[in-house]
Length: 311
Length: 289
Image (cartoon, rainbow over all chains, first blue to last red):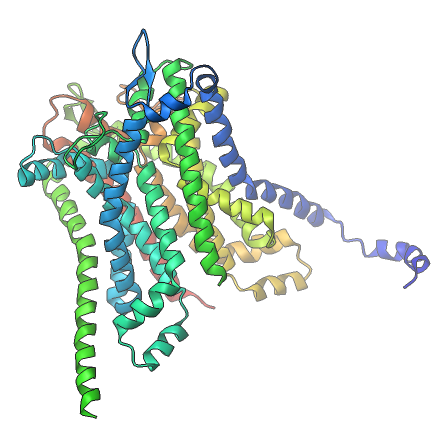
């Protein structure tokens, strides 16, 4: 079709112009929905902008990279010479997270394998619902359980003076992180094509051999992603850790030592600080650090899981 | 021949053993939690009564009920829904009906994952910096609900998106062929078919929102206030924070009182979750396509 013909046919095209009220509404709604669509991006950017805005004063004036990450002394309320070292809190968060993963990884992967590969029918549905309900228990209730049930139990069983310690928080966090790890690991196992299992079974492999030699290697990335998300959950958990660790600044020497976690420090101290004070800004700087660490963990988990999904 | 059958017998035995082993691991995860919940019920149920639900705390929070906290949580959840529903559902519509397979969609999905993964205390810092201070809402129900809504937005988006994507493409094509615009198709065809799935997500949203503590600590919830909230610019008490307070901050609380508060909170949350699960099961049985 030549250009001239197209120009000539314009009046005719106008007769088919469907830009009526419905057309304009459609465009308007599309614009609104687009704004809603990118809202998640706006909010994540907003979180970064606003916590940076509040913490910036500290980062520019007072922040000492070496002191911040290598000093174990957190004395933000000192009048004369406050010190802002988060090493002990990093050690506290790390020890609790590691113990939580020691609890959560075997049991959540075991549960995922049982649900995906062994259980059938009603059992499977029931177990999935129970895991889902487990995930619904609020973190402050977990904290309360640590405080009121685990605490006396640990004192009685291990004959230690204080039951609010790494062990307590680690077990609580492990139980908290397990449901999400279970459901993501189960998704990863289900994503392994059945023909892999059939091929292995046709070769005479037992169910366990099929899982061990075929299913687990094929689902490896998804399982790793599940573990990473669990680490992210445990690392950022606030209320349960605040209530179950004992909340005392300490580099732990054993699982029976009380520790203090990074998120819990913000929750416990922010209410006592004046808006804009150095201590207040230092707590926002902690927030920026938490934001960046969880961002990296979630990003890697997503990349790893997506990578598997593509295959 | 004999060899094969002995091998098979052994394999069967190994298989049963492995199956039992994994079942044990599953039970190790579930049974302690059931015991813990049982303890909460045993110790907490003696505290709960009609009076407990409908009176204010008295004598420095060591006696009395939980009415202001219960009411505060209802307010927080209600305002949260008003904010989260339009934003969450429009985000879901965009992802399900408009978004192409391009970089923007990938960035949106990444943002949703991060929104869900950012620690709750960081959401609290954001709510304080943005809503309480920058937008000047003060510590109020509005600021707390905005913080909660943004934190739990991924739940609404993902549930709504999945139920819209489950509507068969043929439904949309039929509507377009009749001359309907995209929006008309979404409003008259996609949304009506997706609404039960969206509701399931919203019930989960209520359950999540009702149980969160950290995001409301510095944005709108207070330890104690003698007044019930009159508007969205008032502070309020809330169930999860109330549990934290009676469990850790107030001296001389009778031992059973926090159990009662914990039991009420968990009953509220698990009831909403069970409702959502039952709803989903009912839906699955009813689906026409």
